[in-house]
Image (cartoon, rainbow, N blue to C red; front, side, top):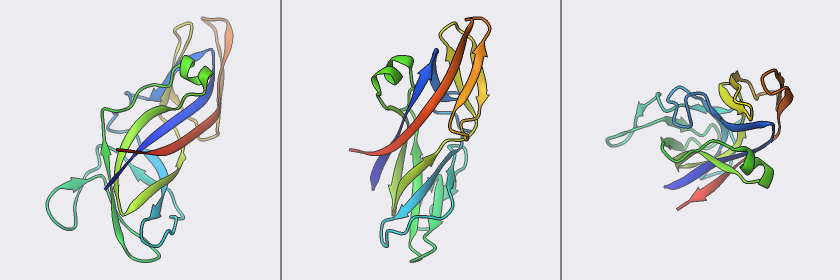
Length: 166
């Protein structure tokens, strides 16, 4: 069992508090990433989708998990279980310092998460207090004009990584 923390970073212009709509522990937010088999090293061709509200029984033993998937190359089964309560929004201060912020913790058995894919369902707030919801980051950036603050707002240079957590 290895725990992987999804960490994100981005350049925020006149924005703060980038996070999934409903917060980092939103049960309906979908996390998309590829998985690497712990046995043969094959990386999945398609992205795997994991959400907190989707729970499946373990194929062996008791308990549940958020994902059970077989490697298409070697047939080994692996699981991914999400552990909530560890994420926090990416603030403007974090962005300016280049600091990565934790979003979600994944308990992976037989797989290693790689290549997180940004999608829709994000929210962010301007420094003037304007809230932007249903932000789609699948294109790699977001740009608007904040009427209230009379300034442009932008999310760019999206980056992510998975770090092993003890």
